[in-house]
Amino acid sequence: MWPWKHPNITESFYYKIEAPSDIDDAHIRMSCHNHAAEDYAIQIEMNNINRSLLPEDSEVLPYQEEELDELETKKLKLLAGKRFHLTAARAYWYYMIKTDR
Image (cartoon, rainbow, N blue to C red; front, top):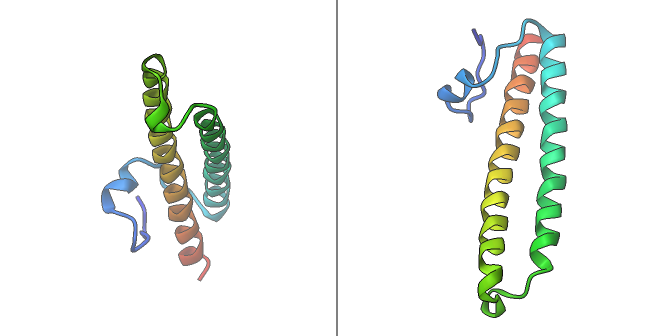
């Protein structure tokens, strides 16, 4: 059970992540989620570079449309993953702040 919940994180989000056992556990979990978010940021950057190698939208050839769609879909999934990990890190951060008082 989460004794404290970040005021800007929906109640349902807390069902997706495990409650920490103590401050040290929360710190480790927060750090791991921040590491994952950093990795997602690198993947998003790589995806953007791959996208920049394709011509502008108005100049995309028919055989490149599928690749463009895949890159856009991948970017959306990566952004969702990054958002998840940042939100989880903030949930653990809030737990640590409230517990430390």
